Image (cartoon, rainbow, N blue to C red):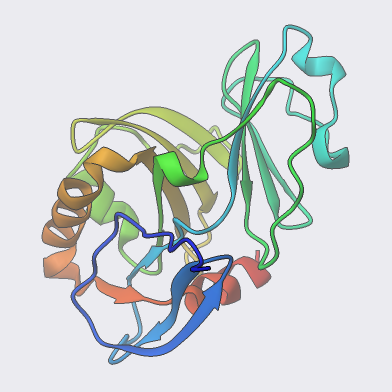
Length: 210
């Protein structure tokens, strides 16, 4: 019996130097010539859930408190919890191992339905300014925080993970049907800043320093 092969919508034209097979995903851990950043990193293989409940504030999925205010996020034990509105939260698992989805009917696994990438390193916010009017460096917001809005004219969720000058980073998710066009737009906008594909190891190192 053959295993099901899970395929990311992200295609990065660079040479992998290290890969792993995990949960039927072929994951690039590192690319040749990554340089010193900025980096575009495919994270589509990492788990993502939507959670809906009319009493969202009274719930504690994965033993993590959901932020009270829409747009706020919290990173705890490599799980990022984002408050979207009064009844909905999005949850991203940054860990290497999958976590079991609760049996609660309010949970939906959206991993394979969506694109998921990270932008990490110097000048990433300058790149983003070419693609959206959203202010990922909003001085009134403490990272991590969530924006829901257009990015390259596509409805997205984008979370600023760090505004630290030495460790800029954000993650972005949207419908996987936009994958090819979204990656093309980001790489084109990042060309003048030397944006290059990087493997998951770059992201893991970034998260370890948050």
